[in-house]
Length: 246
Image 1: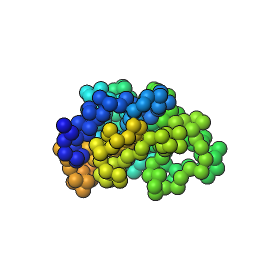
Image 2: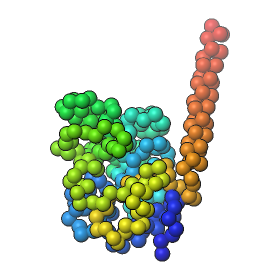
Image 3: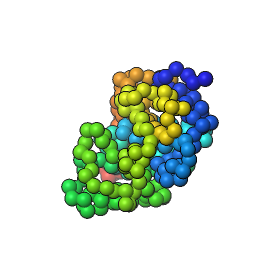
Image 4: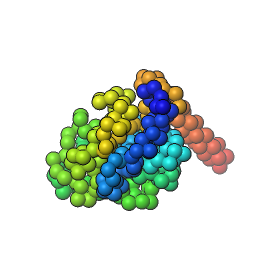
């Protein structure tokens, strides 16, 4: 029996454990293999807020025998994908068997097709250096708000929002804890082919309202900054002490 609809790990995995008995579940990267199946689910996550929350979900999925695509942004105000800590997290997610994809933002892309494709290739190459695996999967950040691409990039990559996928898969998203077409649990058994997008930030052991989660992010970011400042103070204090003795 599937638990009550909410944003807890229990509900998330209740739904997917049931779905596993009826569907083949895989990553965006595996789409062309999945589409040969009568019933399948593409499982993906956009990391818009926190790599730490993404790692937690990735670890939970591993225990349930699930693989999904985690889309990482290189242009993000809340995390630096190229910091030492972030690189370690991205590698851990990849080593758990998940697919790492590029979450590109059209705001940062040049207007010409050739320059934009070159930029996407460069960003994908950066992520390849981080996780040590080829980056095939890409997905646009905020496609309902930011400018849409006016050209096809699927020659080089597999875009999660490309017609190749969206024409045959029902697209479901939990953006801002709001399933536009109802919770994913309402679509299992009613649709044969699904693309389920979730954002790790909204999911946890116990259901939490979005404002509560955002407050937690602020508190954790404050703690992180204070740790950095403390380390920095210690470094320059020791440096000044050593130089004062000369």
